[in-house]
Image 1 (cartoon, rainbow, N blue to C red):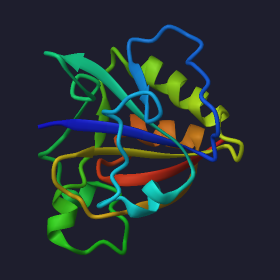
Image 2 (cartoon, rainbow, N blue to C red):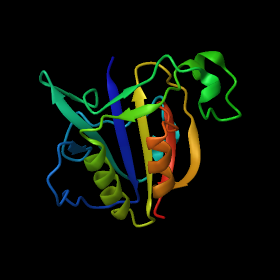
Image 3 (cartoon, helix red, strand yellow):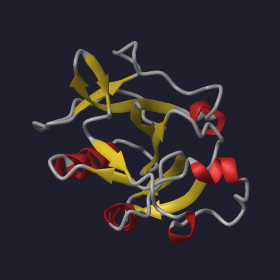
Image 4 (cartoon, helix red, strand yellow):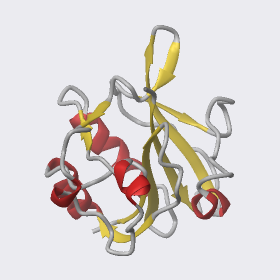
Length: 167
């Protein structure tokens, strides 16, 4: 299975290089052909202005988020914060917790915080996805600190797009 971790820095106009060393590679849509918006399945996120980024690690010559994260595919849906309006069992099946591997969590947080600061409106859209579950779900606004707490509590789910703002 392949994992993707995508961030849209809303309203960002120009690139600013990551000013620190990281174990995570941050690719952007302006300089890297492999970074593509999911225009067919994530229409709302894809249509917004800004710069789209992929957080990746190289694994056997392939760049994706597979080494950065994992999920708990055995967790019961009742234990997850599934949005109330989602009642389709096929959709719910693909909503599992995002778990950032401990070797990368510090860099992950620092990168997200930096990208958030690059948005003139202090807002990013965050999407972790895997193959399957291509049903567009967008969650409302979460302050950055709340997002990180929920992430550590395994309450941020794959295949849901989150609007994250500065605290």
